[in-house]
Image 1 (tube, helix red, strand yellow):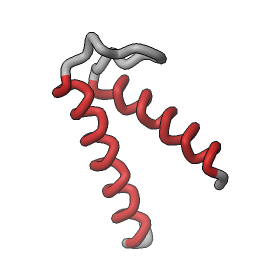
Image 2 (cartoon, rainbow, N blue to C red):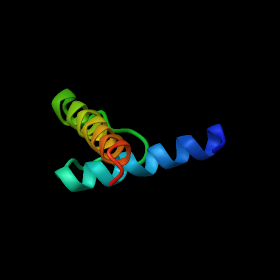
Image 3 (cartoon, rainbow, N blue to C red):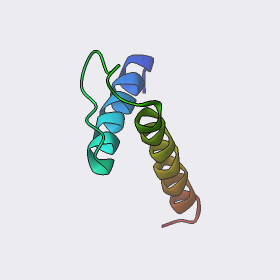
Length: 60
């Protein structure tokens, strides 16, 4: 996967996660969001990536 494709996939994943947890993330400026809201998106992304990798390593 190229760097451009990787960035696009992570960006799409970020918006999906934000939607799942109810953070109103939008394209462009998001200065109206709190640091807690922004941090929760990143934290949940990592949690989902770890869960997916763990599942893959377990052969599921």
